[in-house]
Amino acid sequence: MTCLRIRIPLALAICLGATAASADELSLLLGSTHSSEHGFHTGAWALDYQHNLSPHVALGISHVNEGHATNSHRDGAAVQLRARATVFDPRLTLVAGVGPAYLASGWRRHVRVPEEGHVPASVWEPRLLALFVTATVQLGLYAGVLVAAGGFRVDELFHDGAPIFAFVVPATFVAAAFALTQRVAQVVWTPVAGRWSDRSASWAFVTSTVVALTSVALLALLRPDPVLFVVIGGVAFVNGLTTTIAVELVVSRRSRDHDRPRILAALHTWQDAGAAGGALLGGVLAAIGAAPALLVGAALLGLTLPLWWAAMRA
Image 1 (cartoon, rainbow, N blue to C red):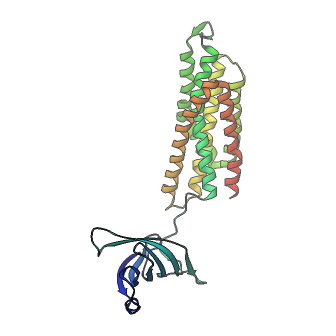
Image 2: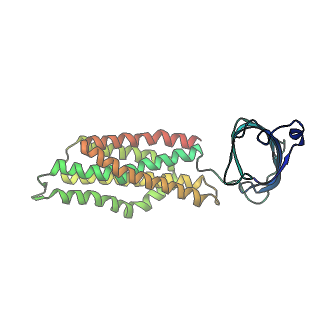
């Protein structure tokens, strides 16, 4: 609210023989209120009375009217204890006050909805938040914990070399093959995951989450040979990709055309945060042990099932 202040010293204070420090002041403030969110512009005013108790202390009483917007009429009263200070020049006085305020907001029974335009959907809606958190946990596991802890698990199991058929290859070869399955899944499995999610997003999400969760747990609990380790990791990455596509598809379908770019951008921000945080979490947990880190990741992945259920019911 922008205002023009007009100060009117009361003659009553002079009649009573009051000093300049204890003179009363009556101020009228005129201005306007503008809301960029609701698109209204209306006039506003305030009437303020100040009684100077001492050169540096004053008592103020105000009535504020913030204007008459559509379906909203806000006005009320405020009482303040104020501090006064003269700076640089006797004619320049700074005043700061604190105190309670009571504002009443009127309302009307009818609401006029513009034919053109819309009310933007909030990215903080519970159903969207549940999907955003689900996506964060997913990327935190598949792009963070699983990659970091999986590499440490390879070193634990095949530190002295990995026997493959009649050869013994360095553990770094197994780690590279393990990480490569993630890229292969993104190239080969993405069209399949998209069609599956399009037919039944819930079925694709739940089935793939259970399979991925089991695969991650097996990497922690078993001591498989190198080839089987890479295959199990590939199964986890493939099903993780399916769940990620299912979440993006549901978020897109639940967004209106004009809200979709903004909501999908918010989803990708949550996913990026999950990937970054997951890599850090995976490294920290792997310092304790790669197997415990993978089990924690599997447990976190299990939490996405009730989150998905809550989002689909909302």
